[in-house]
Length: 123
Image (cartoon, rainbow, N blue to C red; front, side, top):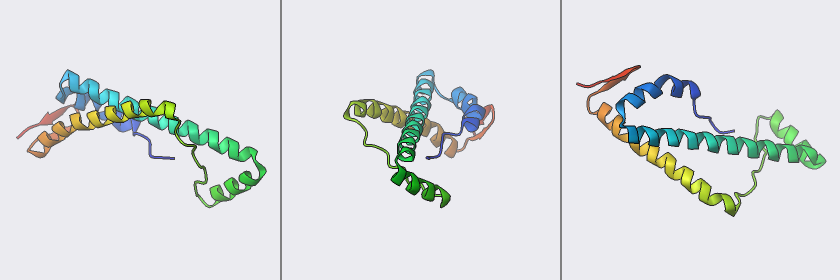
């Protein structure tokens, strides 16, 4: 499975990030984080479902067991249905908007500020 959003890091630093963004940018970042979470859950659900289907088929169950023994991922995810494409496009736009909102904060830090939990120090 993919690398999940680090909830501990988000919990630890979201207040720092929030204090440095405008309210509008903060909402955009939160929406991006939620979209990431939804995508992670959707993928995890799809993997579980595909793994269960493979385990129910004797031929595929053997392949699945062998792959897992070797530390490989043998699960093939089904194609994304056309009905979900519009939802995914919205989530991807939300994620990009969140990245863009954070980019300005990072640029400010790179130009001379530093971040410590609770505040950003500017030179």
